Image (cartoon, rainbow, N blue to C red; front, side):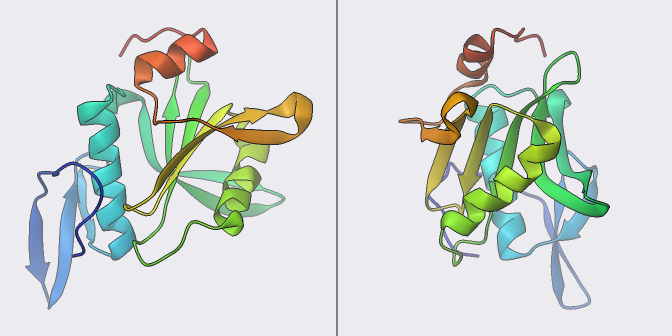
Length: 159
């Protein structure tokens, strides 16, 4: 797989029927190792292992229903009261981060109503805060730690 602009990530990979699978510690099962999954595993490792996001508050491939259609967010972090805090959208390294990717997160957010979202293709990473008053989102200079995110949202940082 392609090297990423993310910290090394200890992954358990197996080959079965000429296909590669990676053990997802959040979902507690092996999943197909696609380029997007490669990014998802590394990005989640960054958030949990380096930025302090609690693994217990993470839902991977969180399903939502919007206008009668089922959609899946790549990852959603929740507060201790089960309120969604953050949507994470990942793409394969070959997929550029375009306006369409940000629009995809905006559609998910119609259902979840978070104030922050992150987007990454493993090479480029963005975090945005939604400014509903001005109907826009503002880019943060860096990915926030879980503590910084909770401080901005006035929420608890309990794992």
